[in-house]
Figure 1 (cartoon, rainbow, N blue to C red):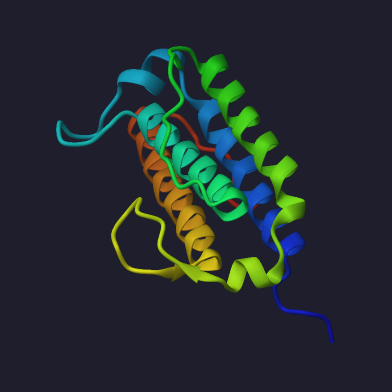
Figure 2 (spheres, rainbow, N blue to C red):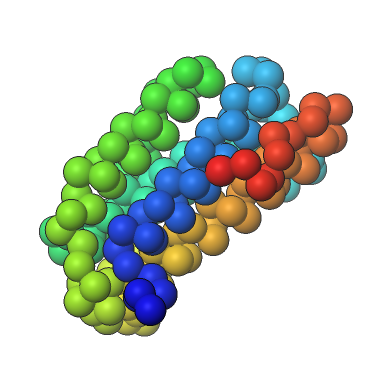
Amino acid sequence: MGELLTPASLLEMMEGNRRLTLRVIEAFPEEELFHFKAAEAMRPFSEMVVEFLEIEEAYIRGIVTGEWVLRAPEGLDTKQKLLDACAAVRQRTRELWPQITVERLLTEERDNLFGPQPQTNLSRLIYALENEIHHRGQGYTYLRMLGIQPPPFYVR
């Protein structure tokens, strides 16, 4: 019997989720992607995407280099630029990923990004994945409110 979760299988899980998220972004009309909100207190889907890209980049860089800094991508004012930013962040993840070992995933440390409590790097990456899934669910709701059929959830 093989390992339940390996760095390679974790990356593939992240990749499958990102492929689905990209299809959600593509389903949005450009205007609504950047301006539609379900309620005044909510954000457009594009802002949610920027958030999880920022988290992914910060966590991967932090796990590999020890540099824990949030840097939001800027100038993402078209659907194509947002899709390009998704591709760029994921490409950086793929480039750094070979340096992420099981030992590194199980290392518990502080990151100073979201609170002082130490956590494992695996916990960070699971949080990042959950955050993307959560916001993608909001994107599905937004699309349905706009009368647009979202992409099938089961196609990764």
